[in-house]
Length: 117
Image 1 (cartoon, rainbow, N blue to C red):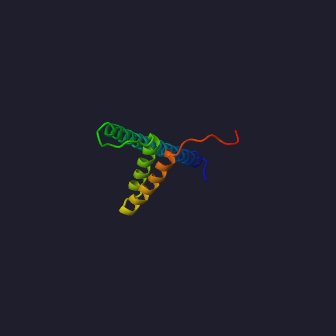
Image 2 (tube, helix red, strand yellow):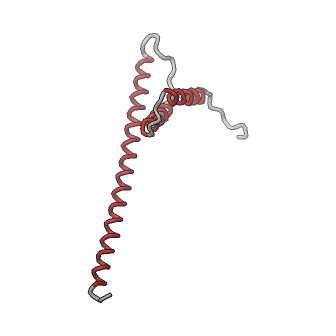
Image 3 (cartoon, rainbow, N blue to C red):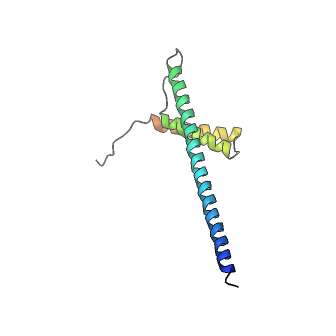
């Protein structure tokens, strides 16, 4: 290889590496932003759902108990996962309802101190 080609090839390789790393950084930033936005939407939906149940509790004949906010967040996160993975179906909703019934039972249990303390 003639000496004139060495700087040209080096410059081209440097540009390729630089642009590839820039594209990778942009891709990672975009994914992180999408994840933050997704969590924001899940939390907003869960909070609104929780608020709605609180309002219904004020009405005669309304619900008499409410699950803690984290259980609503869990539900909405699982629901969004089903949508994103294209697994939303009557069967998957039944399974999610079963999961939420278990979560509700755990939330209803009184907190116990460790017996070894």
